[in-house]
Every structure is written in C-alpha cells, then in structure tokens.
Length: 134
Image (cartoon, rainbow, N blue to C red; front, top):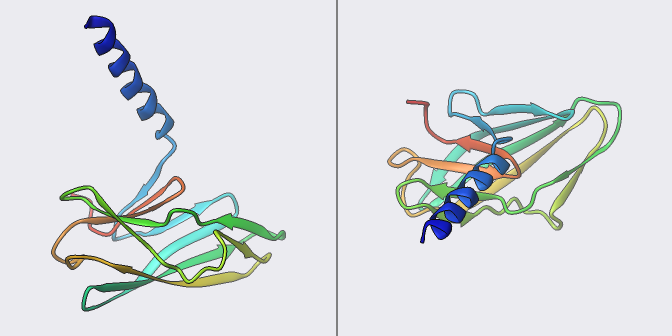
C-alpha cells in the first residue's frame, strides 16, 4: 500500500513539473509575447450561448512562423468541463508571415456567461483566464 501511495505521489509531482512552463494571464492583460509572436485575446461578444472573441497573432520577427493551434479549449472552472473552441481553421497550424498580424475569429458554446462564472481559454502552454486575478 505504501508503494502504491508513493507511486501516486511521484506521478502527481512529475505531472506538476511538466506543467511548470505554463504562461498564465488574467482578464486585465490577455497578451503574451513568446518566441517572436504576440498572442492577444480580446473583443469578447456574447450572443445567446455563443461566445465570440478574437485571437490575434502578431509576428514581430523577420521570418515566417508556423503557429500550432491544437486543442483550443475553454474550461469552466466550477466543474472542470472543457468546451472546444472553433477558430474557423482548415488546419491546426497557422502561418504568420514576417512582420504581420493574423486575426482569428473564435467561437465557443458555453452553458453560462463569462460574466457569471470563471472560465479559462487554454492552448499549448498558454492560459488566458477570462476573469480578474483575485
């Protein structure tokens, strides 16, 4: 039993270490600059159960950058349920040309308003909390 408990604690510790490179932002500053790309989440609009927002990708380098946008998800913090985000992409990657900006219109269906509950938008190692830091 002690070996099982030790193994479980080690697994939890190691999984926590692998997530230590997360970059977390809150509602007052939903902008991240990483590896020559500025990621910005803004322009929120709620219509019925649909939440629409903009994901802007700005390449500030002199080279084209392929940005992977896999598993875009919004998580409802009250129950941990994830809702897939559709950014109208044909591929899971977006090529951002040197010194240019790509604006993606993203849509997700949520059970409640982002004004009423805490949600976070996640992809790759980025976490955009759609609420203010407490």
